[in-house]
Length: 108
Image (cartoon, rainbow, N blue to C red; front, top):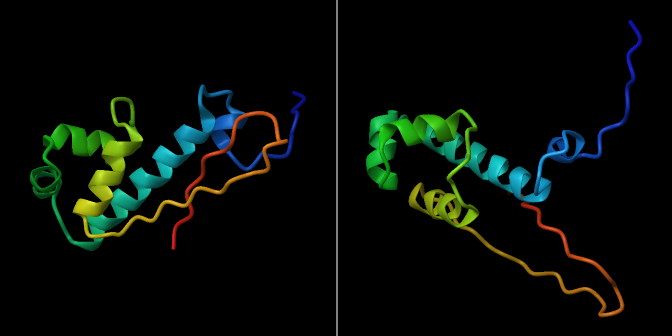
């Protein structure tokens, strides 16, 4: 069997042909932050659900990376409810540049 190996773009969602890959990556990274915060606090999914204002099955979907139905805005709210601060920076480009900008998240 012949295998074709190609270098990653750095975003698995681009590599897989997912629609809106930058958004998918941001949501995945936020879900990871949320999952880590829940674990670090030693919370059960029921306790996390109560804090986040959602039901336990949604917490389960979230920590398993099933992010359909979760907007970036909602995930950002969950991050703050779990005690982390969020800082958003908009980087302006020269007006001569054509095309859409890019979205990414940097974790510190």
